[in-house]
Length: 204
Image (cartoon, rainbow, N blue to C red; front, side):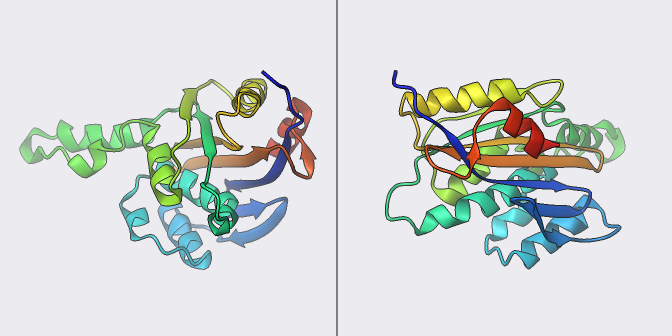
């Protein structure tokens, strides 16, 4: 395995009704639910992907961040060889709760297949992969807190072993209207050194 220098090419954060890209605010909406905020962000970013409105909140959160960081790669003639490494602490609990509520009432029992689809956290990786035609490795991990060391090492291994040309790393936490997405794209070129100190600084 040949070790290469790796860099963070771009990063974004989504929280508190605000989206920042490489440290600059590109969209914000005051006093709104996540549903309202995500819909407004989708429209503001001029995304054209109708399936977005069928996604659960976790997938919408991850999708918006990925859209910002991967859209420039779509113009490349090369195959988009980007791996996905995501994590959070609540898994798909936000959607699990909604699904449980849909089957708890015996008088109006109706288990929704549309909700059940999203009772696994890695479904959001599938949504991103379909949208951007990604066929490389993808993994979703559960940690108590954002684990910068693990994310850094995992991304570096994928790049050093040539399993991918780029790695999109992401922390996407969403539960009961509390949400935060921090995504960053790693490759062999970029403006920020890919190390634990940089990752922690950008996350915070």
